[in-house]
Length: 313
Image (cartoon, rainbow, N blue to C red):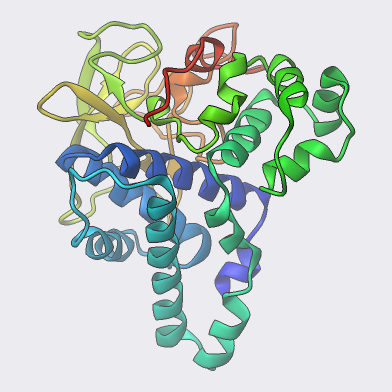
């Protein structure tokens, strides 16, 4: 199986970021704009562990998976994860049955693969893994700063147990988070604020600093949203709904294989697309203190540095 041959840490992180964003959008309910972003996020998941290298086909398959999904009905977080897991599994099985010399054997090898464990990660585990990865620090460094045993960060990030109250406070300090993001009450709540912006880009460029431009690095017949909005401050691409909500979107780059990038440093609509979802995304939330178009250590998003809103009952 191609999935087994190409799987690596980069693909795993790309899939995890796509699953985190997709789960968050499913739990808040989205209109047509958010559903269009879900289509691309689902293709990112397919690419990492099911799909082929034809962008148009994978967009079509993702659209078919989303066809029966109510666009405006929020789903409970476990239900959202279950739906994504089933869509991923079905695409992988369909491809194996269509393309493998021994389809039954391929399916038997495919389904126990560790890629599927990503679907089981709850918001706490995803948050710990994604924030830790974005800091660029080793697990040993973080655990030392938090005065924790070295194996605990990986254990919690893989969904095997959770920190106690004292460990949560220490880990939040070490990662640069407001303590509430690791509070028990927030464990089941996805971070939808990372993936839906109200009226302006989180980089602070302002509501009027957007340029219209193509979201596709090459022409894809029938692809949705040929034009999007690009923040002229940081280069993050969005699609917008009629109520002014902005949904950051992965961009399709050119090339013979599927590659999804958020933005490159200083990208514009006619520029080349850059970092894939294995890097921190959306771009507007994660940036170097030296500046939005500078490389270096990343800053924790303001969203995480202030107390989270009260979780829904």
